[in-house]
Image (cartoon, rainbow, N blue to C red):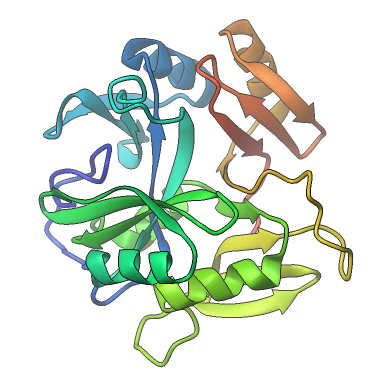
Length: 269
């Protein structure tokens, strides 16, 4: 990812970290959209992002927050017949092996693995239909800086958190003996994923000991930290988006293209 981060691009850097040394953890987020210019205008107004191009082509842009690349946009939803959505990408040492493991465990491969120099990417869905990506290759330089500048965290809303943790753990090497792998713990009814001691993801299926809810549509939710939740909600409405729910600490929003995400008042680690 020293030139481009999948599938939306990333920074050029000196220090290169690869998925062979840091794996199983979220390493990027990307948004598929239909209208690149409209998407850029919306997120600039909402989150103050600036933009630069990506070597992947004219349909891709990189979002910058205070000069730090934080996310990618790929205006390929219509062209590739993909859903408009925010998607987290997880680092893996071998994309082909990760895809094979997912398929063996009841998951599906929607796209790839495809080559996106300097690496390879694939778009998958877990057994319950939640979409996620994998990336093999060079990571964003100063990976720890990216992780703190990017989403506050990601959360999987699913029907059975324990079952989901097993699925992802077997594909992504969580809680393995390999150096650099992620740690998994069960805390307060959630599965909590830590990388190098920091919480990087959570898996939630509702109340402890409650039966799986068949009405839940499993999905990964991306959370962005903002200084003014209410202000972001009003800006979303003003610029063609919508507010799905809102309280003092966070709001679940939908952009004009239909992609759902959360803004939160403070990082929750």
